[in-house]
Image (cartoon, rainbow, N blue to C red; front, side):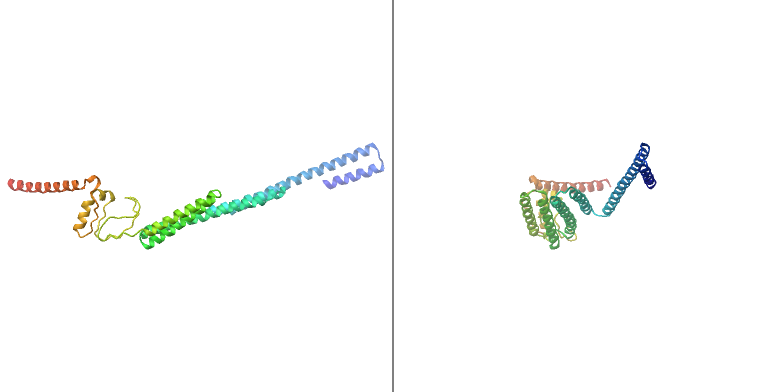
Length: 289
């Protein structure tokens, strides 16, 4: 269509050159206008085609980005998203002639924070494994202490790096130093914990609460364990029972509120009464026979 119109314009131009009258001028002008209209239409088609092509390329890039994000960890996904985000920012900055130094620093910081969090995630997983090992082996054993020290070291490092990332300078250095000091103090406490030797009986020390089960102990067949509350209530009695069987004394005073001996007395009286009642029952049965 364009080529045909160009021929028509040339023919109209030839006729006008031969006979420069008003009729040939109008014919030439109409032919030229028609040619311009066809060229404009073609340009519009080309522009639309170019737009569609750009849109298609962007869609393909988006699909590639989505495929790249499939099957990766949360932190790796965050790293890819940062790369994609700053790739677009760099493109826009270069297009507008803007300096990208600040953008490069921001990108480096964003990647560093994600990498640090990725390291802390791995350390948390290792700490959890060490916690399980510590519980299995016993916190007071050498192996248990080694696991606890490793866990405390990991937790201290993780907390210190988090402090450096989260707090502003110079407070982050102060916070990190405080965290490290607390971690070292915790490690020292772990190393000073002694495994209880209870072959002859006795009170269990260590840390935790009366029901936390945070202290490991070696027990022998036939031994029994009394809970912390009952031990406080009947401590002198339990100590006396342990001594009677050849164990050590661990009573350092009366029970809670001084009621232990009263409870013991009540138990003895009740026992005597039960025996007396049994005797009376036997006498009655014989009398009835």
